[in-house]
Length: 124
Image (tube, rainbow, N blue to C red):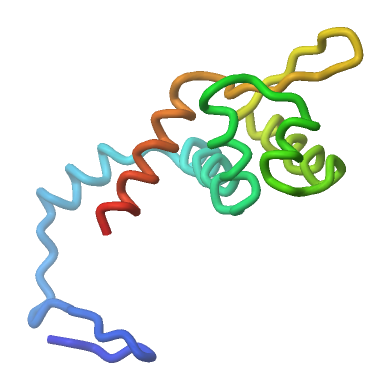
C-alpha cells in the first residue's frame, strides 16, 4: 500500500502484522535514551557546513584560527565561534603554544565519521 505525504509517496504494509521477534531484537539492541540524546547532540555538530569544513581541514594536521580562517575565507571571529561549539561537542581539542592556540580533531573516530559520511555522499 502506498500513502501520499506531500510530494513523497510512502510505502506501507498492506496488512497490520507486528513481528514481535524482530521488534524485541531491535528494541534490545537499541541504546538507552541518555545515549541516543548524547549521540543526537554529537551529530548536530556535523549538520553545519562551516563546522564540517573546519573538521575536514583539521584532518591533515592541527591548525590555528588564523590558518582555518584563511582556508575557509572567513573571519577569525566566525571561526572561533564554530570552534567553541566543536570543542564543547568534544570533536576538537586545543593546545596553546605561546600566544597561538592550535586546534586538532579529538580522536580518530571523528576522522572515520567524516570519511564515511563523505564517501556515502559521493556514492550517491
